Length: 98
Image 1 (cartoon, one colour):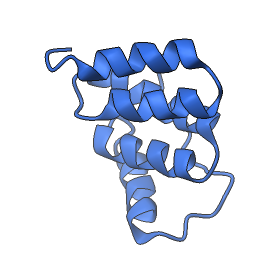
Image 2 (cartoon, one colour; image 1 turned 180 degrees about the vertical axis):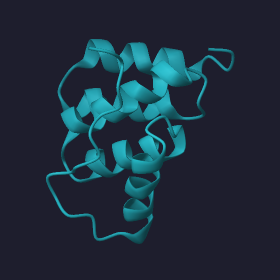
Image 3 (cartoon, one colour; image 1 turned 30 degrees about the vertical axis):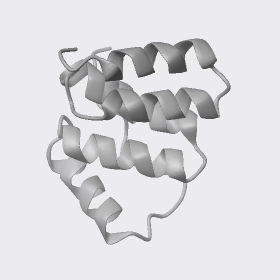
Image 4 (cartoon, helix red, strand yellow; image 1 turned 90 degrees about the vertical axis):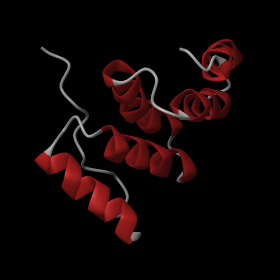
């Protein structure tokens, strides 16, 4: 098994045009970090932090310096009650050169 992108089949139907557009982009290009961040953020805002981390982890694998991704990951870990990983992500996100 490789580092394939998470399947862009959300459990909840996306009503937002922006989210639907991101899902379409992922079908065309599974490594689209912009689309991965949008879908990860959508899952987080929809109360699915574990699912969000599937997408956010893919972003950090592909592009660890992607602006803001570490802060969003910190919020996902906070939502799961994982303060250790949340703090590690906050530290990583505060490092402009990470």
